[in-house]
Every structure is written in structure tokens, then in C-alpha cells.
Image (cartoon, rainbow, N blue to C red):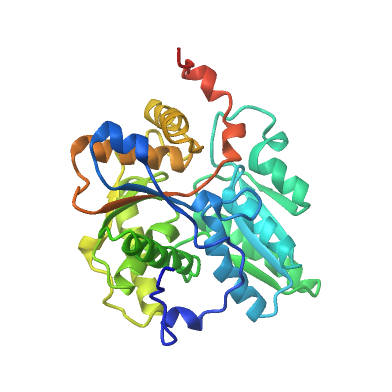
Length: 352
């Protein structure tokens, strides 16, 4: 039995939490990748298996947002994201599970997508879950998206509702990052059970909640493991200060303002391509490799790019071999169906 690091006096026990994720998620060896690369300690943290409407990393984050929403007596939860947002899909599912109403705002964040996005992927699941959908014609403007969410919330309050808003911008408390403090603890516990010291974690870095939560969580539970954040939305020069701010805001929430240092935040934008939702040839090759070598299904927006980052770090010899290096599979499986047209673009060929 794995011995837990969480104690009664752990600051994490003070935050309201709604149980949504199937956790702890498995930590599986990347056996085929190890055989090819010669790295002896590669693992995947299966956060694609968190449950909640096809799984994904957002289930952990939503536990703390919905915990706070229930604590405040909210009856409706609002969230914003791209048309194929995993966050919006799992938020809709969480609301159904907890008997709350949910309204999602979908931004036109990714250009040149084919028609029919309302008939597949996460958008289809949103419709099946029966939430109210607002379309927002702006893409890369977090402030505008949050302001419009607040406007919708004001309209709901005027009708007597009690809305809770999950904002996108980094100026709001990173409640979702608490979910990845939990994940960091699980990784430390699971690698300890394997008797392999934890040396590195690789994770997609977008909104920065998962990235900041892993950094803060590792330090909170006494690990000095390196965290490689693979940028999926913005360049490293913009992402680094964002992750650092989110990590420090989280550290203050945990009662240890000095928990995270500048050198703890590493971002890598070598695999981002043209930006959010724009997979590269490397992304597509990584999706193929993960599927065929490890039977892992990745998505073109987050996990495909971060797995490409993992393979790149291995090729560079940037991952230590004297301990466990853990790749976090953040899920996003429904997005595969929305991006099916790309397999023609990149001329994927079946194995002989």
C-alpha cells in the first residue's frame, strides 16, 4: 500500500473540494520508448483516465473550483474556452454530476478549422450534456473573454441565480492549480513505491494551472524534481512569467510564499509551432508514436505537443537517467475527432 504524504495539518485539507476525478491515476512505464532510447526510468502519469466524460487533467482542477462554488452556495457555473475546450466539456460534466447548472462560453480561438465543429469532439459532448452554450467571436483576448463571462453572470444574478465564474485570466486565484498539487503528491508517492527517486516531470503548459500546480506541489511535498513545461499556447518569454506568477500565487495560498523560486519554472516553446491548436508535423508524429508504441491516444492541442517535447528532451539527453522521469498525459481524447482532417494533411501511412 502506498503511504500518503498528506497529513492532517497539510494546508491542502483546508480548501473546499468536490470529488470528481478517479484518483490516484496510474503511473505506467513507457516500456517501448525506454527500449528504443535506453532511458531506464520513463513513466506516464495517466491523467487521461480521471473519468468525468472521457477524462483529462481538468477533472482535478474542477474539484477545487466546484468545491468553492458549492461552498459559496452557487447554483450555476460559468466557464470559457476554445470551441474544442476540454475544460468546458469536463465543467459541463461536473455540473451535471453535482446537480448544478452550467453555461459555457466558446471562443473562436483556432482559425482554419473545418466546418461542422458542432457535430464532433468536445462540442458534441457539450451538446449531449445539455449545457447552455454562448459563442464568443474573439480568440486570443483573455480579459475580453472574462469580462463577457462576468456580464453573463450579472445577467444571471439579475434573474435571481447565484453564478460562480471560472475565469481564464491569470489575475484570479489559481484554485485549479490545487488539483495538480494533488497530482504532484501522487507522483512522489508512486515513484517512492517503485523505489525510484523522482528526477523530472514533463507537462503541457497552457493556462499554467497544471504546470504551476506540479511545480508548487513538488516543492510543497519536499521534491526538488525538475519540471519541464512544454508550451502549447504562447512563447516561453510570455509563458515563464505567467507560470511563475501562478506558482507564487499558489504558494501564498498554501501558506509558504517563498516555496517556488525563479529557477523552478522552465518553459520550452520549441514544439509550439504556429500556436494554440496548430499542430506541427512533430505533433502528428508524436501522436502516431504514442499510439503505436505505447497505445496512448494523444490530442493535437496539448498532449501531442507535450509528448513531442518529451521525445525532444530525450533526444537531447536532457532527462536524467538516475531517476524517474514522468510524462503527464493530460487527456484531450475527444479532440482527436475534431482534428481528423489533419491525418490527410500530414499523409499518415500505416505500418507495413
